[in-house]
Length: 67
Image 1 (tube, one colour):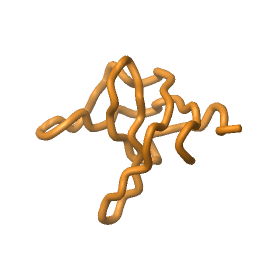
Image 2 (spheres, one colour):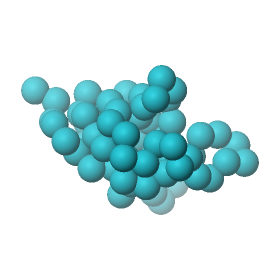
Image 3 (cartoon, one colour):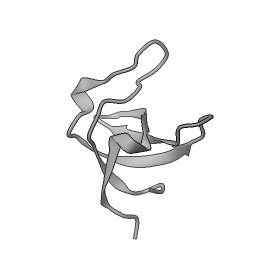
Image 4 (cartoon, helix red, strand yellow):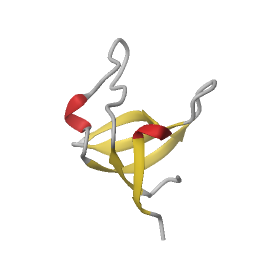
């Protein structure tokens, strides 16, 4: 996965401190805006539902790669 890829959220992600699940995002389509650096879990920042949220890469399914 890379910046610009169109992805479908297959599980909820983190929307900020203290929040560990965003159920409204499941099944929605978004665009990867940045690759996040975490200690052990690779993640991506995704623009979905008008907000940027951070998701683990295993919570995302690539629909269309950046061309």
